[in-house]
Length: 138
Ligand code: CMP
Image 1 (tube, rainbow, N blue to C red):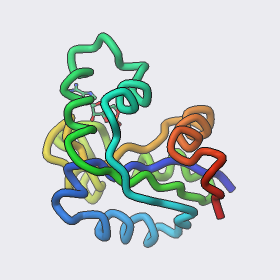
Image 2 (cartoon, rainbow, N blue to C red; image 1 turned 120 degrees about the vertical axis):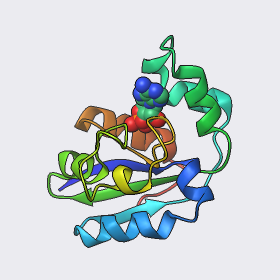
Image 3 (cartoon, rainbow, N blue to C red; image 1 turned 90 degrees about the vertical axis):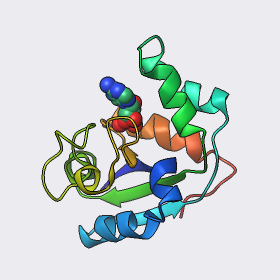
């Protein structure tokens, strides 16, 4: 069993798409381990996306990720990291395959509804970012 982090981003939360996204995830057979709602500070968003610092889309990305609450979700399933990335689709909805979350729900390549960890190492770091030792994962 593998775990990964999904973030339902502020655009999708504002459009009442939390249930729609979780429905698609559960329909694939993935288990929701934990989730909650929170608004990131600028510092938190900059830290979470530190690898993109210096890229032209970094500041607008931080603006977007802090404009409202998001929902970090820990998910579990067999080989879930690549499977969830497939369900999520490519970064830009124009490039994302039919039936993917981003194709159906994203506005554009920045306001793209969700984030999903891209490797086991990233998943571990990203889960720890949102779910620290104070919050027991069940
Ligand atoms: P995500 O999968 O969360 O990882 C980095 C995020 O940066 C990405 O989704 C988008 O929200 C944003 N992003 C990546 N590339 C671009 C781009 N070319 N233009 C605007 N935003 C981008």
